[in-house]
Image (cartoon, rainbow over all chains, first blue to last red; front, side):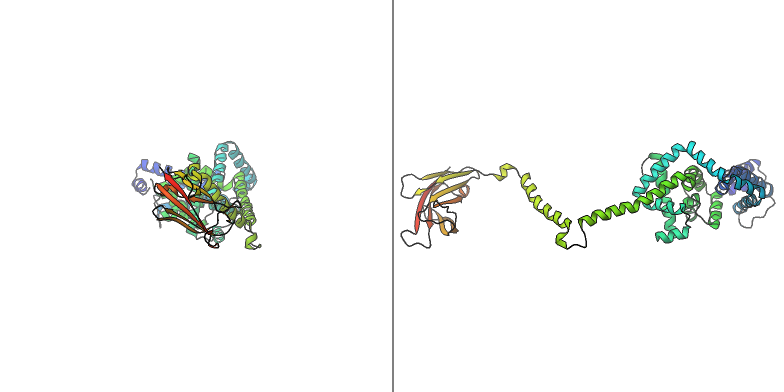
Length: 176
Length: 228
């Protein structure tokens, strides 16, 4: 990325396009993580355009990544602040939940079935992972979970990543 | 890229996918995702699964159900062990101990069943001895590991009382001696198992002595022969 940025700053159009694509994919992912509506893609695109418009004149105090990310955060913040989007969010809130459920019931049915089977298998060999997931679903914060499980923060992340690894392997090979 | 560029931030991956990070951590991790191809590819490829794990109702219900069953399983295990080892009862009334004793008793039975019949049964030859002065010598034939059951009648012998039995060769060598022989039955017949396979071929004299009787009624001699 640093290389792309350097080339783009020196006027390489192709590098600039690649940089745009690089950011767009990632911003889209982040925006979905924060907003969880179809507006996420629009916001990601807006943020990318702003970055491309301003990056040549900007002096990055920290790093380009941090600055670009700041632009996206600002766009997401604006989205939540704007009354229109909030109304839309509130009105569409329940509909979105249902929509997501419908999507997962239709498109991801097979994936969901496999995922649930794998979770059952994992629970037999590594109950810690499902225990953590259950606590997360119940709304406990990381600190509370680590206190309940009597593990430190690093071990908590290790439990999660180990569970994720097992889940991934199970989804690929149907074995834990 | 095969590896994460920052293992500390990389460890936050699944926590990020499950939306359990603080605002500050999310910011750090997302900036890391802008740089780290590996972590971004992981997060992107696992996005559908992460979404199901984080927000799908059926998945949440399943996980909750798996946790609910756990105390029941533990309780069932505890009940089972309590049945076997009820701590409130004295040791000798605890069923586990009883089963253990039964097991100890059963094991030798099974072991004996495993031993082949050939090993258990040994051929026994039986001879009835005659007094030494009779014309015929009783004959035992030596073959393999056989033992000989020697029957002899001793007038006045009483069941359960102690007698002295000796087997000597005709040359006078002592082959066998039992100073507490009690194998007489109510018919004054004594029974002795002799290790004939370990004895040499030849003539032998068996002497039975009653330590309580007076001569000449205190002893009687019998002869027998071992042949090949």
